[in-house]
Image 1 (cartoon, helix red, strand yellow):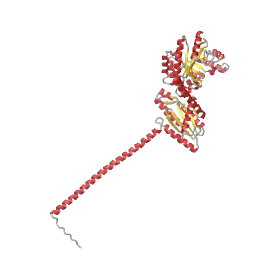
Image 2 (cartoon, one colour):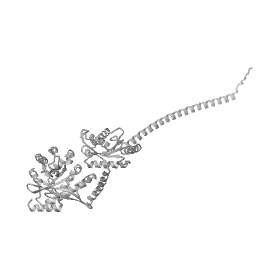
Image 3 (tube, one colour):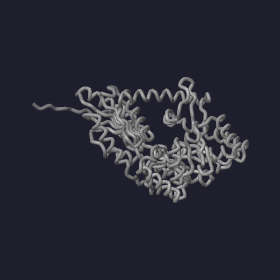
Image 4 (cartoon, rainbow, N blue to C red):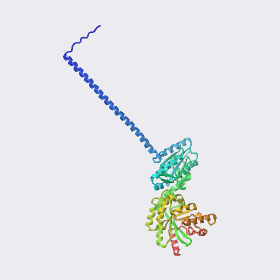
Length: 506
């Protein structure tokens, strides 16, 4: 079938209408296409911006994660030594105690202090001190197994957790190995540094089954190690806790004793056997305790050192003795003898010690050569090199220096040859029965002869019998001190002693 479409020609009006409609549609389509293109472009730009923002957000999150890790590390690790710090150590200790309880195991906590670390900073500077701490950390780590924990708690304090330890002696072996390693010289920034360590050991569960108890008891053992001469280790026992509690009580009383002026001095004469004249007097400290009566220094000096009271007590002794001595010199001229005062290691190492001595001498207008400062054998043997600079400064001021309680013999005399020390005082134990024992007799006579040959003045303390006196005369030692000549005297008694000797022309 054929369909025929007959198209009538458009009139001019219809044609115009059609064209207008066509152009409107075309324009609308073009506008729509342009709008679509613009929107597409906007969406593309928005998408690009979104991707950029997303990338920035991811970077920020990663940066935050890094900062968080760094902050966490700073919070739990020591920057200087790169060891866990106190906070992390507390967590480690609690974790290891919990494990030990769960599996029925034992562990040991080691509390560690460097001996006289402050001297390293004072002598070489903090850069060397920091370098030493880093090297100490390395040596501690090299002494331990991978499963053990070591931390720097702050300053010169370290701590170690030894896991799965069978007995306290096993922990002591590890501690002694640490001490031995630390005894070797450290070479830091061109300086050779020697240091020792003191270690307190608390064994779990015997010394406590909680972290706080274990830490406290390890510190008590550490304190005992320092009391035993430092550079050693001690294991906590219940008896140590009792001793420590007693020391804490004494420490509190010492604070009050200073405030209440309960200390007093006694003076023991030193006599020249050839002339029978008093050539010196030693100052001795006493404590008039309100309940216990007179307390001697060997019961409280170590406690005073632990509680940092030795400096104010020592300054009080020096000031009081010098003031009294100058008064005697003015009242009983001519009065030619030396004032001898024993000085502790802590005083020698104190920064303000030399200036304090200068100030006191100036305050009382006391010539420096009237004063003799004594250092004990234990201090000199272990620390002479570390305090020699201070000794030389005192010697240059004109102050006399003496080596007290001497008993080492030849081995140490050689060290004194070029030191600022001018006198030695032999310990009482050397002469107690020397006149009866041929070997001791020979050793003492040889020590006296060698000391005098080295230019050292020799004094013997603790002389109590005529036999001892005669023995010393035969050994050509003529300066003595002890109960045979006089007991230690109070100010009133010493004043009477001086007056009596003056009246006799002695």
